[in-house]
Image (cartoon, rainbow, N blue to C red):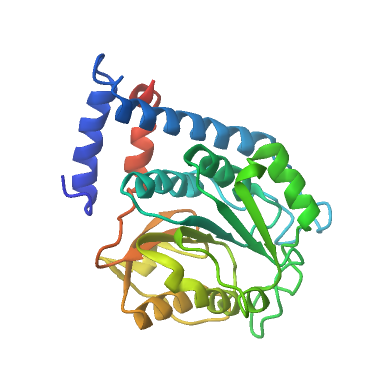
Length: 286
């Protein structure tokens, strides 16, 4: 099947569901390992979704950062699935999360990394957003202390898979280079934060994948991505940096405010979200 198109992905998933339902074939190691990963990680995501603290005691009830669950499972599980795909295709490297707030997404993603033996790096100031002229956000919003996030990931995720890196990105990457990365997830809100972290873009494997919050469906148009620079837009600096590297990005909308990006030439496509959740239906992997 053509895995770059939605139609090709649907044909592939239909065949895969048939294999999952066929005794004798569904016990083959490749199929059983994949089914187990999907089942276990989705169950963990549902656990985190249900039990993670819902409210930020340090914010006002009408504040943008009052709710501690800023992303849905439908946004985050495609990242978890893509980690398996990248690993199965032999893509090397670690996983990085930029901007973790209270550790909600970290708790889901670290568990997936633990299942796959992938090291996860969490980069955050742990003091909230930096100042940004012209932004609709306030400096210090979305703050979760390192101790608080560490405690949450210990209780709801897999702390053993995680290394924390405290500091604003502009400081962290001034004299330190991260290891090679297979994938990254950024929920950084601001153009300036995206620009600061894109200094490490060349550490992402050419077959790797990037996921970002602050996306809308209308920026993805027939394989092209259109996103104009703005103080509250972290997408434009990412597109610009990968153009500079000669690895122009294509991508697709995931769900909510999340999009997926990969190099147009040689990148690893992300499964369409509706197709992925069709695969995750109870009859598929049970």
